[in-house]
Length: 430
Image 1 (cartoon, one colour):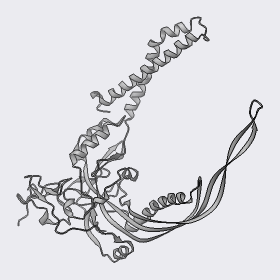
Image 2 (cartoon, one colour; image 1 turned 60 degrees about the horizontal axis):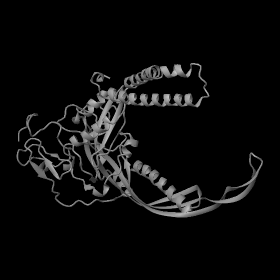
Image 3 (cartoon, rainbow, N blue to C red; image 1 turned 90 degrees about the vertical axis):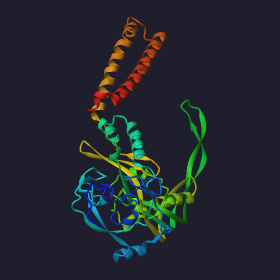
Image 4 (spheres, rainbow, N blue to C red; image 1 turned 180 degrees about the vertical axis):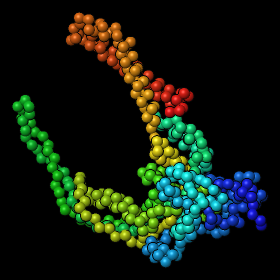
C-alpha cells in the first residue's frame, strides 16, 4: 500500500497509538482510520465515521504476580524487557512514548516543548496489567473547572485555561505493586498508668487531696506476622507525590490484563523508579504499618518501640499503568500540575495565587474598615466621649454594640469584595 498523506483519515494527527500496538486491531472496520479507546467502555471508536470496534480479548489475560528476585535476574539478562521509542523532556526529565506522526508537542508534566524529532530507544520492563480510562476528557475538564472555581485568589488566566478541555492530556502513569509476607520481631516498653493519692495545700491554705498519675514501664518483646497485598508505589518522578497519593484509592481489584488497544489515543510514561528502588519505597510504607501493629500488640497506655527486625518472604510484584488526566500550567516561571483520577474523578493539584488580587483585597478591606468606622460610629463616638462616665454600664453596652455592628458590616463587605474580584470582567488581565 502506498504511503498516505499526513491529512488522510488513516493518519489522524495526535491519535496514533503506542508503537507496540497491534495494527490489525486499531483500524476502523468501516473507513480504515486509526481507532482510539473510548473511556468507560470496552470499545475502540473512530473519530471520523463514529464506528465502534469491540475490544474482545483473544483470550482471558490473568493478572499475574511476578517473583521479585527472579525478575531482577531476568532484567539483568535483558529478559522480560521491551524496547520502546520515547521522548525525554528537557524540563522535568519525564520520558513518554512517542507518537510517530506528531512533529511538535509539549510535556504533559511541565508544559516544556518536546523535541519529537530526536526519539530515544529504551529498554523497560513491560507492564502486565492496567486500569483503563473510565472518565472521558470532557467530563474531566468539567471536574477541573469546578475545582479551579473553588479556589480563592486564583489568577484569571488559570480559569481561562481550565475552560480549554483540550489542555488536559490523558496519560498512563507507571506504578509498582508489591506483595510481601512479613515476619517482624520487636523489643520495646509497655507503659501502664496507675494513680496515687497526694495531699496538698491550696492557695487559701486549706488541705486538699488529689489523684496523681504515674506510669509503670515493663520490658516487652514479641512477633508480628502480616501479609501485605498490593502495596502501591509510584514509579514516576515527574509528578508531586503528595498530590498523587491523595488521588487514592484506586480500584485495583478491577485491573485488566495489559492490552495495547487501551493505550490508543493516550500517552504512556515509562518508569523512572526501577523495580529494586520501588521495593525499597514499598518497604518503607510497610514499615510504617508494622510499627503501628507493634504498638497495638504491646498494648498498655503508652508504648516505646526500641527495635524491629523484619524479614520479607515470598515477595511478588506487578508493573501496572494507572490513568490520569493532567494539565501543566506555568505561572511566574513556576510549573503547577493539576491531576484528575481518570477512574474516580478525584481532583488534586498545586495552585498559584494572584498577588494583585490579594493586594487589591487588602486595600479594599482597609478602605472599607476606615469608612465603616468613620460613618457608622461617628456620632456614637462623640456621645461616648462627651463628658460621659466610662464606668456607666449603659454606655459600655452601647460601645459593645457599636463594635459588634461594625464588624458584621465589615464581614459582609469583605465577602462582596471577594465575589467582585473573582468575577468582574475588567480584572481579567490580572
